[in-house]
Length: 115
Length: 113
Image 1 (cartoon, rainbow over the protein chains, first blue to last red):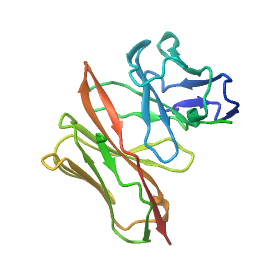
Image 2: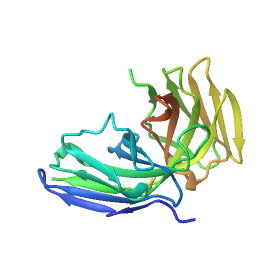
Image 3: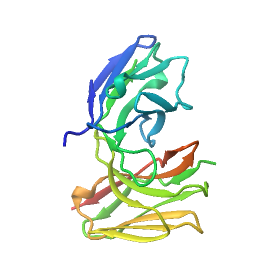
């Protein structure tokens, strides 16, 4: 079974520039998550999709971050414009379910550096 | 006060030692308790998953949950250098028809050969 794929793996941009990350979840997984992990901290949920609908985006800075999940499969996360404090690893995860006992599978992450 | 508290370490132990990793939490609605291992420059991977209070064992790993004290632990027996990683606790609680996950900050473990 193929894992969660993310690209790019690394990205360096200047502040005020835009950037987009892509995630391909495990086939058949209905739930997709984007997390932000700042160095030395645990992952923080940015947005959770169930199929192509948003379940939770309460911690997504909506003035600069946006995300979509096309046809309930792939997803993109965009930052426009980027700030220095956006430097972090952006993790995508997917799961078969979103309740009861289930396991989240994480991708390798995209490491973003904003200069 | 954070919902989930975890000592960031780093924790350094000799090979073969028993390692104890801990988290405390404040939200009594948490139902599921997980431990993830994260190697450098990798995504977290699930190690252990428990639903109720008590112990769960899987090989060298034992997860313990004490809901009355709002305290969870992960024990690693006969620690190996390959166990060197950051260990994240995570907990899930019902939230508006789905389950919301909250992670601890992670404890960095180094096992010295």
